[in-house]
Image 1 (cartoon, rainbow, N blue to C red):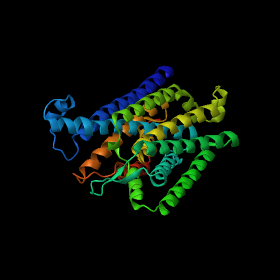
Image 2 (tube, rainbow, N blue to C red):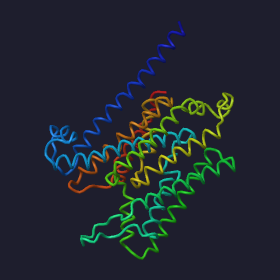
Image 3 (cartoon, rainbow, N blue to C red):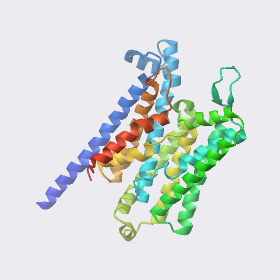
Amino acid sequence: MAGDKNREIYAKITGHKKAVNLFLIAAVFVSAYLALMAGAADITTGQLIPALLGRGNESTVMVMRNLRLPRVAAAIIAGAGLALAGCVMQSILQNPMASPTTLGIANAAAFGANFAIIIVGAGSIISSGTGEIVIDNPYIVTIFALFFSLMSAVLIIILARTRNFSPEGIVLSGIALNSLFSAGTMIIQYFAVDTTRVAAVLFWTFGDLGRVSWHEISIMTVLFIAGAIYFAMNSWNYNALDNGEETAISLGIKITRIRLTSMFTAALITAVMVSFLGMISFIGLAAPQIARRIVGDDKKYLLPASSLLGAVLLLLSDAAARSLISPQTLPVGAVTAFLGAPVFLFILAKGKGGVR
């Protein structure tokens, strides 16, 4: 009798978690619709599907297929990728404050962008005389941002490997590197002679979903799918780590290898997302925390819930960025922090642990 009751309770809990993930999938579609409809161009719901299929008014088709659809695709992949990376970092380090931002990976990418734009000279004013700031060589900026963000991740991994750092030590190493790259960024900007390049750096730093092409989105997608498969295959190992290192070791889990490979994979996903889109804060920190309070700590459900919630948050933030002061567009990275931080603080203050 007791066994039947326990199975019934377990089935009820897992059923709730599955229902939450199904709800989040529906939320992604709703958020994508809202993001597709947001913007200065007045497009009705009836024009949406024909425009996506390449039919109807030529200007409507161009706006929808060339401008809004790539933004929405980038928001889904980047939001899901950053949230997934943050969830894995928090799990393997057993630290709720671990995220791509707090571990210095995002700031390392920003340093690389500063170096490329100011030192190498990848940003300038266009020749039309309008004074609009553009990045002349976006792929150079991306390469430098990717290089330094991966370098930050590799440094953390080397320190953890050679010094046998604890999870807390890894987080502290990330914070130290975060401070180091932030200081390097400030020094580069301080000694910059050309103010236009400084402006170009600020333009890059403001996360922008509209700067990526379908080629870059495809790279992000392939990397995200590969990382998601790897993390899903190790979800049981992450659950074992939640019960303590001694328990995990007794189950035959090679903790160091799991932590290092998971850390590098999460850092690689973050590095690519940030190098293509710029700084997008909050998603990697808050989405996993919010998801944990909804579905609990079981990584079988927490990993997809975090990804889906990250996509929803970034989609809604992008829709808000294009709607609040339309026709002007706000930096989506600022919107994610401005709108997301109060929500995160409210959930923390509420103090409900959710389903465990």
